[in-house]
Length: 124
Image 1: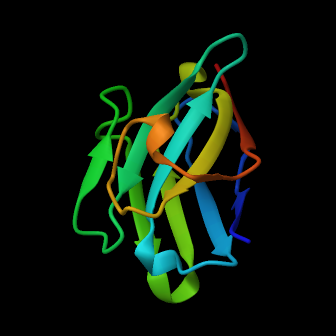
Image 2: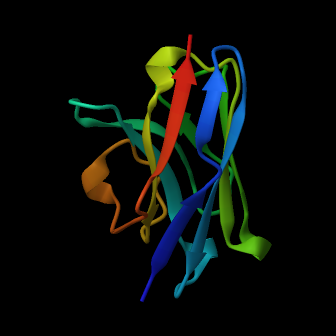
């Protein structure tokens, strides 16, 4: 059974940084594309970033380009989301997801497996 666990959330002031980790167990991590999504209170879940299984292609939402970086270490079964220059509007629960087909899609429906989420709070 594939299981995803996000860690690294927390509270930070605007302009600060956080690094999120997504660990996968019960499956072959190197066969999955990984995506990050977020959901702010009262809003729908939105795409943040995604990376192909080999890490050769990445995809970002316009709102995070230049501030967030997605990466992965297949030997450690872990994906990362480095978030810099954080803004209050980045406050949300952040979810990682795995896609067995390996596309770095921005569409929720493409992903078969999801983590429980980790809270990120950015204060002004």
